Image 1 (cartoon, rainbow, N blue to C red):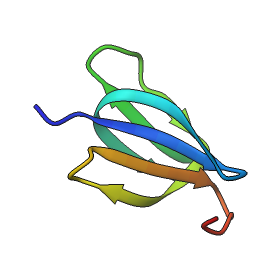
Image 2 (tube, one colour):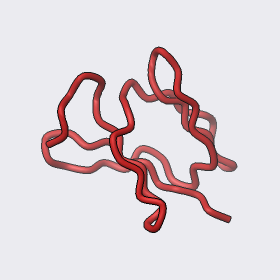
Image 3 (tube, rainbow, N blue to C red):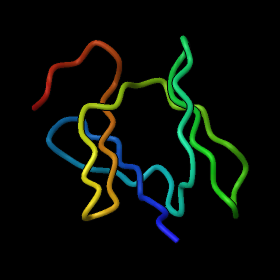
Image 4 (cartoon, rainbow, N blue to C red):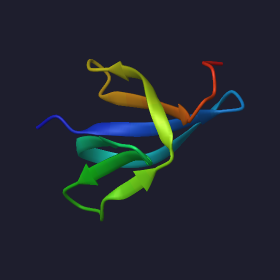
Length: 67
């Protein structure tokens, strides 16, 4: 299977928010991350990069520019 890790990027650092993510739903209030093993998590941010080869999704706080 192809699960992903989602990272919050701010102040030049990456912090893992969730691993084994199997679904992402974009909502007005943020991003809903879904996993087989954890409860869904709503993150107040926006996706700015997806790397399918590394199974990584990078998220930044809403309204912030890429660092």
